[in-house]
Image (cartoon, rainbow, N blue to C red):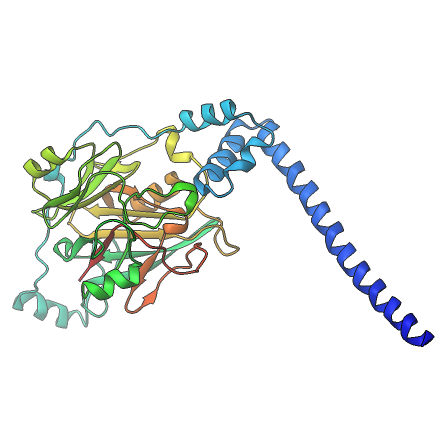
Length: 353
């Protein structure tokens, strides 16, 4: 009987010490985290402070962390200093000339003589001739994927089957529209990061019809001539311009070949999604992973620079964070930071057939 009591005490002691070690580790990690945050927000680098604050604010679920060492007023001032500016310059459609995607007999003969397809002027090669090029993106601190759709007429905006309530996952959008793939689209009402994706925030247009007209955000969408428009526009002006499909988010990254270098483009490190267009009409769809070991994330400025690398003449940031997702050929092409590890319920998406 005495041995059983002794054995029981030994087990209890081991368990007690084990949980004691865990508690101690948590305390140490917490103290180190607080010390690191203090250095970030109270240290000598305002740029580092602002990047940390904006990263937490955009993360939303952890935005309370910024108030540990900063007052709400200080956080607000930092956010306002990196607020999105309105695009004043209108998209110059003459800068984009959509090239015909059908090959004529002479081009095919030339291709045969050259022993196969050749890289285009941007250095990209459509090896299988399907008009879709997938390119891995790897930079210091982040990784992602760029999909190039050579024919912009293949790109459109999808919306949920039933407006309001709940959105749909990107995979569901692709399957329902019988598309090849796509990326997440515009803003939606997402209180505390728990939104259901049912209500888009800002002007949203599908097949030439607005299904959300209010707009206080940058708009990005395709005209009936398949040219990407980026800028500030309301529903009436969009109809006059002949916008067929588009969503709202921002900020703009590139307009008429000129990059946006405003303060808002250095606002935090997070997963990013962006869409752009080259001068030959090809559409650029970019996703950058974040909040993970293989890819910490990117700033808006990083996304702008990648778009420039791929020849974008116009480009705009789309919804990011846990909404960032890319789907193609029956599989997710990135590693979403959402709780499910796949797509959140979305209010819309840019798809391609």
